Length: 526
Image 1 (tube, rainbow, N blue to C red):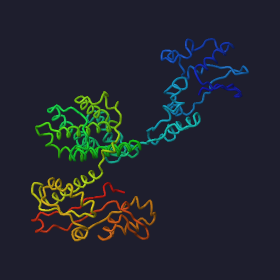
Image 2 (tube, rainbow, N blue to C red):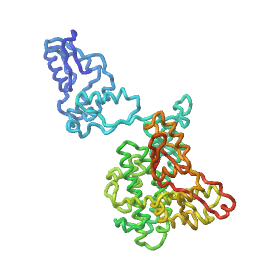
Image 3 (cartoon, rainbow, N blue to C red):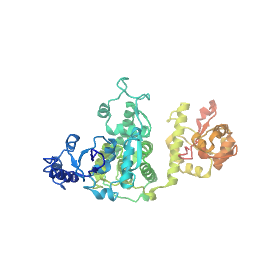
């Protein structure tokens, strides 16, 4: 501590800078208590590294400096140490050499307080505390606005890693084999940062194949045909593009909007999962798969140009919003894309502006009906697999229960696409009454939502919800709420609906009929 006290402890001096210390040393040399200035040659006001290399402020040097009090008594430095975490707590100012340099960065809140800090929970009484303690004492301010306290990295069985147990994973070997981006994406997408992570290298390999591999293959598909056709990017009105282009751009802008909110809320896990879903389910498995013929055809038509522009926009935007989590891969993807078009002047994705969602390009109705098409297609494929009916075998009919007119109209709007995807001749939409004899409905309560409201009555209400009849569930679906034991229960309190189907008998098998019901409440999980 820079505190000098007299032997009787009645006088003390607190030194706030090297300049002050040198001034005091000159006084004691004049008083005859010291013969030589240990900091001789140091130039006050010169902030260069060369100048500061001339002095040593370590304990063994400053302890030999004896100052003189106002009454002429010798003063020695306080020998006790302050908690060393206070050194770390001074980091926001010490790193800027405040107040001797960069004073405006702290005083004008340009570099202080921090938006967030991240450390383990064991720093609660250490770094987390001392940062705030110094900031509030000196500046009457917090030192940071948010804190992310990360959990532990455990082995794949949930055990703490240790050399003794032989379950420790060498991080350098992991990075060398799988790369930093795949490792980081796996860790962020697999568990919230504040939760403990069960670390399994097989999971990294899966991320590398299913996410990075899919994204790379999508880029390779684009690059192959774009190079053949000599594609040059130029803006085209989105409203004049085919419906499938407008759909993927709607999904893209919804993704940007969602991801932006997640980043701002310090929810990187939700960011990674949302991007992963978009790349795998929407971009690769749906858009590119359905648009392949547009890229294959020989003539360089407006339709083909629109497909190129749309896919380019998707890839470029994904690179930008994913860059904070996968900085190396996304920078290479961005640079490879931009090398062809010269669309951006920035040399790196990290020097570009973060994308902003274009609300005018979001067509909610188009997104909803395409989601219905995706859901119905997936469910029919599942039924085919369950009944061991191959996709190449055409089905005569698929029966789809619908609850409202809007859903019926949306399904009809994409009916041709669904029939083509699942290889079926007819879609038969049936209402709730017609579906009553075909579907046995079940409902699963959302215990988290119920518990926060009902307390001790939660189990009783949840039990009644689980025993709802088909009619009660239909009423809940239709009206959005119902009453149970005096409590009003909404759809959000009933997390998931399930349907069981009667066993398909022999005659039905021969007719190749299937019955499925799409979840028209998109994203209803709570």
